[in-house]
Image 1 (cartoon, rainbow, N blue to C red):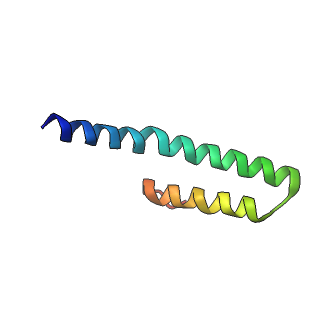
Image 2: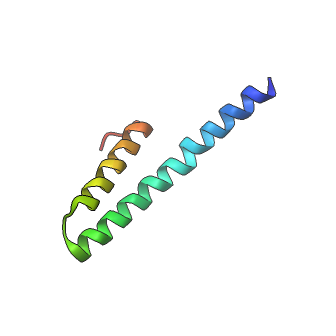
Length: 61
């Protein structure tokens, strides 16, 4: 019983803390790279990853 509760708690913590933090970090890195070097394959890849994280969170902005 405790094993299942612990697994759900860990998954909840990842979804509530780690995913938004990673979403924010990817946005900052992409914006900084775009400001320095312009649009590139790396910034488009970071935007795609950020979009995937937003879908995972359930926010389609």
